[in-house]
Length: 403
Image 1 (cartoon, rainbow, N blue to C red):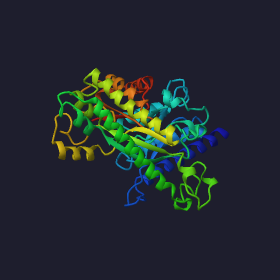
Image 2: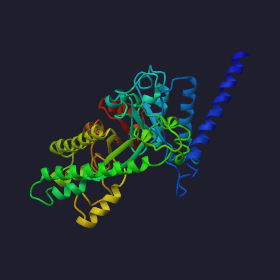
Image 3: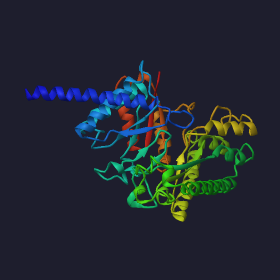
Image 4: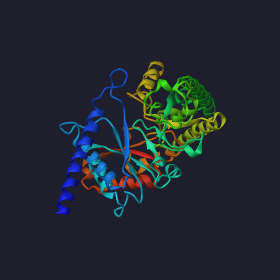
């Protein structure tokens, strides 16, 4: 009798949990509470909770996003991110392997969820077993939160966020100093102006930070009034916010490394070993400057492979330079350090080329993999690709199945 009662209780709890997850997803896609009557962009990370309750929530959340919003429409939000970790869900003997398997199965049909790799060197460095606040957090716009140069003891994901981001248009610098404008690329001038742009963006981010710090606790009744930010419970309503906001991040982004290399050398990083070496050198240069700003100003400056402004930047450059083959003759620049979408390359090569940039972009990054539907008849196909990404030190990935 007890077993029957227990089974019915579990079934009822499971049904209620599914309805809750369904309601959660529908609310995030229908409640227009952002300024301008827009839906609030949201992200949620999951996959590492091995408790019975956590496993039930994760399973039902995955099944709810699989069902969609009606007629199996894929929900825009939240951006769902499955956290992959060896010993938790990556291998068959792991407790949450079935949830990883379910996530991959749904991904093969819906192209969601995305995947974050906790065992990647730069993510694992801050991980503390049993402390989920040290499990790296990614957002749908590629933003990554973890390190904290202000207070290394508070290198957590909870109670922090990205304060501001400004992106640099790399293709314009490439056009200005590359082989299109000169017989030979002037790399010295390129790096000189790139440094000037980085300093300009740094000054702008600091100015915005100072303006944000002049606000009061009562200006943010939810984030600070509910003590969601680190140390927000320690300040008075009339105090300025420097003690709180200094824990956040100031991101310097970049767009269109591929087009920049094309302008400088005539080939992008998937077409030439020389271009790949220069690409890494450019991103290393920007990351080094961000690290210098951290040390000098004791603020969390970081480098992000930007996913926004790619269409805006190219329109501005088209107005100045016209349509240059392989550079401005398209609708938008490539995101961050990505290889152009129209360039034919196998998945393994793409992973090998883009992987070295992930460790350099501590403010955020992503690799986008496209798979023809006919290749994923076996579930192991996606799972093996994800395992390969983790081995190659990829931090965050999106797998898109082409229909």
